[in-house]
Length: 319
Image (cartoon, rainbow, N blue to C red):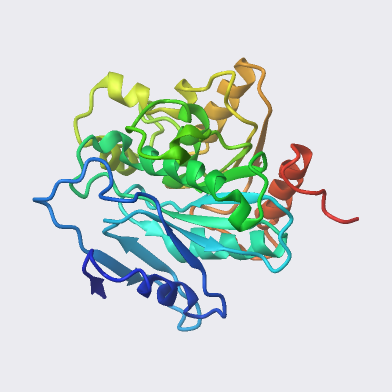
C-alpha cells in the first residue's frame, strides 16, 4: 500500500499493532519540517510486506517524510532505554525484523524501546550524507528530554542498530557531538551520546573494498569522493568519547562482510576503548532475532544484555 506523506499519525500504530496486542506511542522528531526538505520533491510512504508466511509480518518502509520515534513501553520498566535503528541499506527500513522484534525482547527485559523512523537520504533531501545522522542525534536528545515522561534514566540510554542501521548507530556513537543541524529547542542542548552501542552485522567502512556498495551509494550518492567515503566510515571517526561498543557478525554474511565489524573492533582497540566482538560461524545477514535455536548466533540478545549489564545500562540477568 502507498500512503501520502501527510497521513495522520494515528495510522502508524495501526501498522505497528498488526499481529500484536501492543499499541505503541508516536513521537515526532521535529516540530516543523525536517532539515533539508526539498518542497519540490514529494515523498510518499510505502509499506511492502516481504513475508511468505501469512502469520509473520516482514514489512519494509520507504518514504519517511516525517521522521519519528515509535515508543514501546515495557510492562515493568527498569529505567533503561534503547534507540533501535533498523537496517535496509539506507533504501528502506526493515521495520518488523529489525524494529518490532527487537522492541519486544527489549521490553521483556524491562527496557523502554524507541524504534527510529529515520529519513532515507536518496529521497530528495538536501545534504543527504547527514540526513540520517540528523535524525539519530535529534532522537537521542528527544528521548533524554522526555526521560521523566517515559520513566527512564538519562544516563542509561543505548543504541542498537542493524546493517545500515548499524552504520547509523555507529555514526551516532562516534559523531554524537558533531553539529549537523541548527538547534531548534531546549532538547538540542542535551547530549546525543549513547551510553552503549550495539552494532549487529553493521556496515562500518564506506571506503574499503569490503564495503556494502548499496549502503554507500544510497547515503553519499554515486561517485562520492574518497574524502566523503572516509568521512562517513565509522571506524575512521572513533574518538575518546566513543561509548562502549558491542559488535556481532556471522562469518557467512554474504551481504556485509565480517571485515566491517573487525575494522571497528580494531579502531576501538587502537584507542583502548571498551569493545566486544562476536563472530559466529553461521547466520548469514539480516537475521534479527529469527535464527533457529540450534544456531549459536541466535543467542546474541543474551550476549548483548550481558554486555549492557556490564556497562551499567541494565541489571545483570537473574541467575
